[in-house]
Structure formats: structure tokens, C-alpha cells
Image (cartoon, rainbow, N blue to C red; front, side):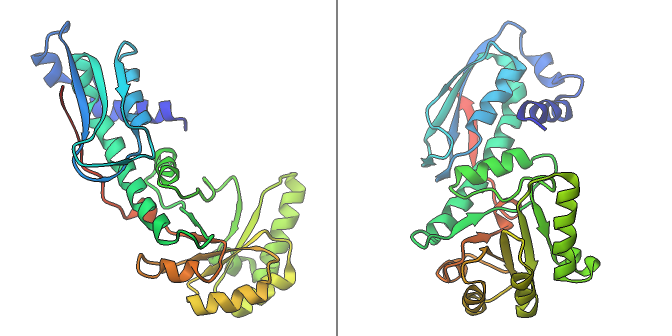
Amino acid sequence: MTLDELILNALKEDVGDGDHTTLATVPEDATGKVMMVAKQDGVVSGVDVAKRVFEILDPGVKTDVKITDGSEIKNKDVIMYIEGKSRTLLTGERLALNFIQRMSGIATYTRSLVKKIKGTGTILLDTRKTTPCNRIVEKTAVKHGGARNHRFGLFDMIMIKDNHVDFAGGIKNAIVSVKNYLKEKNKDLKIEIEVRNFKELEEAVETGGIDRIMLDNFTPGDIRKALKIINGKYETEASGGITEETIRDYAETGVDFISVGALTHHINSLDISIITA
């Protein structure tokens, strides 16, 4: 799904057969100017998306962006001005705010975790724990916050998780089956496998043919032991039960990546409003 398709679907959901309140109260030829203002500190994300909402509603709308995506903002900062038909400004207001408030909340929380692991060399990743049909904007917000995206969906990377291992009959069977599948389908996808304990880890290392090992619910101490076993042969990722309080401890183990689902599924929207200019 493209961004424009997402916005069009959201407009259909919100506007339906018409913004009848606005149509009934505001003259067709009325024009106005509004500004989008931050009401708390954070990291802004979704400026381009909010701007696009108004442009899709009316290509004649004029926008003047003052603060770009990924920038840190303070309370009362003006993010952008929007000028055009009053009906357009009123109809697009809520949807534009829904996008930028949630995206900024994601970017703000992401940035806070990125700062906690700064200097360690470990890279913060998101997951697929996103709002259905909103993944494109939520993963964009993660990047604005300074982290990286893990796979976008089920199609762009092989991720052998615990249930795949169990259904396949073990680590080795799962890896061998994946290698055969990729060869048969002539696909070149990176392979990551999740391990739950040292027995699975040793089997994964012995079997080989993978790109990354995810250490699921390992303690920082166990991750240090695991990294010695892996010995730099594969990329490593820590995941599961990692909190704001413990993320630095995990990063200091030397693990390559830390993935945190809460980046997109457990955040508070940033307070941003639209007022007349």
C-alpha cells in the first residue's frame, strides 16, 4: 500500500459521503490560514504525511513547513502553516493530526531509546507489531526517531520463529527447509532464526546457512555467553522482555541489534494541535 492509498482510504473512512457539518456552516468560497503547533516537547514525524492529506483534498492548498520530520520540537513550536479553502482545512484537520500525533509519539519514544544505547554500537530495530494498514507510516516514524526498520512484512526476509521451528521439527529441519525453498523459488532473502536456549543456539551455529541469530528472552549475561559461541559468524539480535531500564545493559553486551515491539505498539501520541493563524 502506498502512502497516497493509505490517506485516500483514511479519508473515505472519515469523510464518507461528505463533511456535512463543514458543508452546512462554511461558505464554499471562504478561505483561511491555520498553523500546526506543538503542545509538548518531542520529536516530530508525519509532517510530510499531514501535508499530503491537505494536498489530496485540494491540490490548491499552500503549505509552509517550518520544522521537518525527525527534528526535535519544543512546546509552542510552529510546525507548519496551511492556507487554502476553509472547507479543506476543516475537513483535513483531524486526519492530518491523527497521523502526525501518532507518528510523532513513535518517533519521540524511539529517540529516547536510541539515546539510552548511544555509544554502544548496537542498532535499535522495530518489529511487525504495527497498526494494521498503517505500517508504512509507523515504520517511517521509527526511522525519524533514529532507529532502523526490521523486515517490512512477511515477504522481504526469512524469519524462522519458535513456532516455525516447532512445526518443522527442530532448528536444523527448519533451516534446511528454508534453504531448499529459496533455491526452488529462486529467491535471495536474508535468513534469521530465533533461538530460545543454548541447545537451539548450538544447533543453529552448527547447521549454518543463516545470516542472523535472534536471542529470544536471553538475559544480558546469557547473551555474552551466546556471543562467544557465535564468535562473529553471524549477526546477532536480542529481543524479548527488554525495557527502558534494561536496554543499556543489553546493548553493552556487544549484540548487533536490539528489537523492541513497543516502539510501535505501546506509545503515547504527541500533543499537537491546529489553530487559526
